[in-house]
Amino acid sequence: MTRFLLPLAVFVVLVGFLLVGLGLNPRQVPSPLVGKPAPEFQLQQLHEPEKTLTSKENLGKVWLLNVWASWCVSCRQEHPVLVELSKSGIVPVYGLNYKDQRDDALRWLQQFGDPYAASAVDPEGRTGIEFGVYGVPETYVIDKNGVIRYKQIGPVTVEALQNKILPLVRELQG
Image: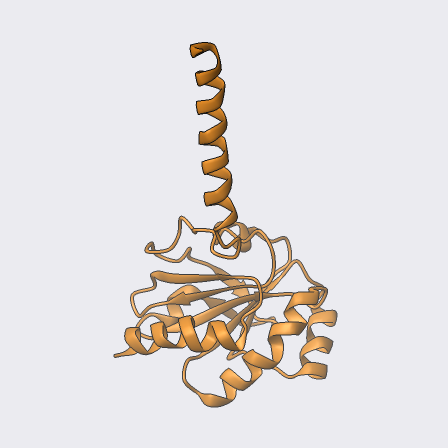
């Protein structure tokens, strides 16, 4: 009888883990950087390569960093949301153009609109790695002290913007 109890107990535990796992949202992967200072960077600007964009420039204000690329299909999905957000003036949005060709990125922004206060160029993806990027698009909410307060994995949707990002931005700006 005890010979059957151990396998049964292991089976019940495994089913329990499976049920918990099925209830998790795969878009809510915790980021080890949330609550920590954003990685420092100094990168060429997309539109003006003779100028740089640094993480230090935004100290004192709440801002979003959106990691995007012209080759990214999901970036096209979120782009109209970012364009509308940019028009609202609620929070500045900066771009991190990730592993892209400059001409392709410029053409893409010209075609679909440019929601970014500025875009930095990360051609090899090194800065993206420091931010923990494992797929584009990703968007970070960064507070006045340069601390990452939220990471949106995948496209920014109207729902994510209204329910998570903007309430947090308003709280941080207050």
